Image 1: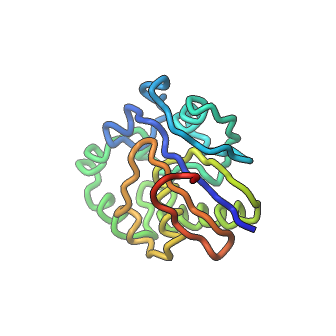
Image 2: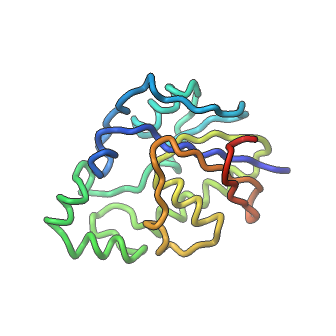
Length: 183
């Protein structure tokens, strides 16, 4: 049994443009959202506004998956990296260098990666294709899990708006597929 999961990052939002921790804003230009996606047996997504709106703009009837929620930034939500860096420089450096740290009172990168890996392994028990519109950090966590990369590499994966990433396989035997999605 082979499972295919196509991860789609949300369209551009004011928060993404300003490097602001998600504050629930809408995507900037829904009519410009277009990707040539193959038919999927299942569509899911992060429960955020930007992921829901991106899914709708792509014509997907995606159900929200709580385990695909973005990384909980605690009290930093709605603030830019620049603001946090100015107010709490040591805390920001610790959070970005230690996957087990959560100085913002939210979720650590380690906890987040474990949550996403658990979702992926569960999704891998379903044959067929799943399209998931998810936060960029969810894509990062999936890539690390599939490659067996350390959590310290989390911030080394750039995920631009509307990027499509495909993984194929199943529990414990995933492959990262680069190039044309769904072909």
